[in-house]
Amino acid sequence: MNTKMYVGNLPFSATEDDIRTLFSDYGTVTEVYLPMDRESGRPRGFAFVTMDSQTAMNEAIKGLNDKDYGGRNLAINEARPKEERPAYSGGGGGYGGGGRGGKGGGRGGYGGGRY
Image (cartoon, rainbow, N blue to C red; front, top):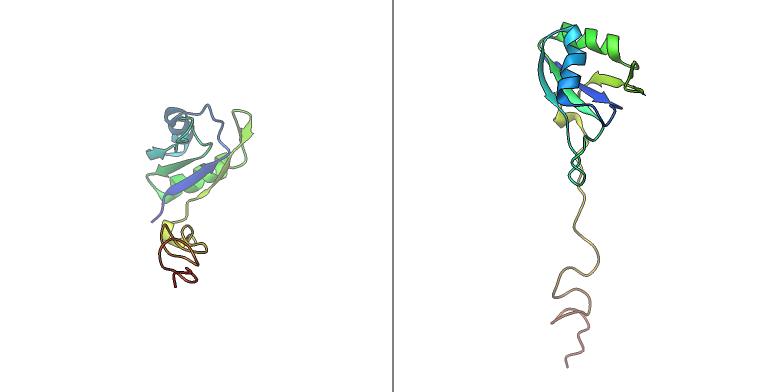
């Protein structure tokens, strides 16, 4: 039973305590996760809130989704489990490989012109 919500479009000034207080009108909040930006140390503008029951989560979504909070309209929906998200397979690769080798580069490789 998933009782975790994604809460988007939060004002950057919102704290974990602010979010907990906002959602506690709808039931017991068991967890608030407010991701911070690595560079600035400021909140990233979204959070994950977990309630103690499915009913509390549904009531919070119904009561707070698209409501003004700190000058911004909240976007709230049930969080998707990680395994449902598409896998990202990025990074690495490129033409010619790494430090040695590749086409005509470094030692050996194709077309090195050694002989």
